[in-house]
Length: 194
Image: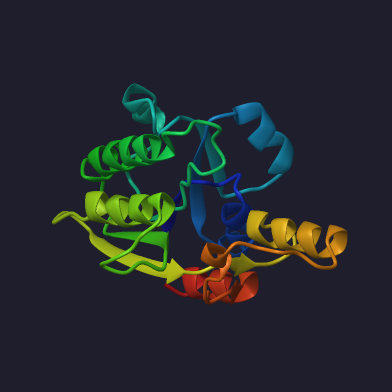
């Protein structure tokens, strides 16, 4: 099978790619920085790296269109811009535009756990991306995860730094939030077997 992996150089993408390669799939990975990706993915047969940016629709023309399945792992929270939700929406719109011109039958999207009432700007953005990605041309499978716990993840590293540096902490009441953490190996298992 030929699989498109967006977010190939991100936390999830870098861990998912070896699993899919071991299954014998051909992977197409659009990346913004081709040289950085080539250094990371040296000597990987069945891996096609393409320099493209989902913020730039024209650059997507370089991506092969004979794709069976796509993983949407783009996440703009690490971008320094305050208006990350605008960037996320633009990426989703451009992805959908691209995907609807291809042979993609299924899109697998990793989102956050959302509800219909009080949502942070971050979770509202994730929910809007899901709505944007919906299409009649392909099936959309959405996995919703809370904090993904695993060495190297942003959430894990922030929590670890706090625990190591602050043995006790007075926190505002709004910080008392229930969450459903999920181990990275479980997230990878769900995505790999989708």
